[in-house]
Amino acid sequence: MDDPFHARVLARIWQKLADALAGPGDPWRTAVVATAGPSARILVLRAVDPVAATVDFHTDARSAKVAQLSADPRAEWVFWEPRVKEQLRLATTATVHRDDALAEAAWAALPPQAWREYASVAPPGHAVDELAQAHARETVQAAARANFAVVRCAIQRMDWMQVGPAAEHQRIRFEPGEAGFRGRWLVP
Ligand SMILES: Cc1cc2nc3c(=O)[nH]c(=O)nc-3n(C[C@H](O)[C@H](O)[C@H](O)COP(=O)(O)O)c2cc1C
Image (cartoon, rainbow, N blue to C red):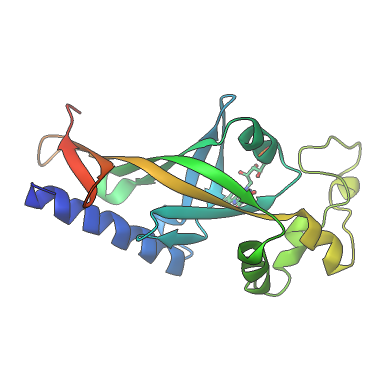
């Protein structure tokens, strides 16, 4: 990391991601995550590991995004904080975890009742005639557990941008190097 400003921005990125995990109202608590399709949706950031350079989300393994990731593991996250006009794009490669220790630990750490999110009788996106059918749920946790997935996304590239007006727009691309992520200025 040659430019000290780049180092500060990178540290700030990891700090903001960590802060977002703690705060339900934090603007980076949710992100748009795009998969091949194109297909994009809002997801909740569930875990961040600055050492391994990964970010996680939780989802229903029956959802369209999981099928899309099985065909093409690329996922792009987009975070946006309006107050400071700061955008972060993460180009990642996703791995779906359902039956391993990672999924078990995440399942065990879910707050009470959260398991119900994964207990729909019909899969997410399935069309039904009545609203009540959309809300029909299995009543045993084991059924929900079978649908639960952690998607771990390995960060291949970061693209950070802050929009003026006080200063010129600033944009930096961070890519992995021998000593961690290395930044390069980009034309905004
Ligand atoms: C504020 C908000 C947070 C959401 N968080 C999640 C989430 O963490 N995981 C998830 O699978 N879907 C989440 N959703 C629903 C997704 O945006 C999406 O509608 C759903 O997962 C189906 O996406 P798919 O058909 O592309 O698989 C959230 C939606 C909103 C509005």
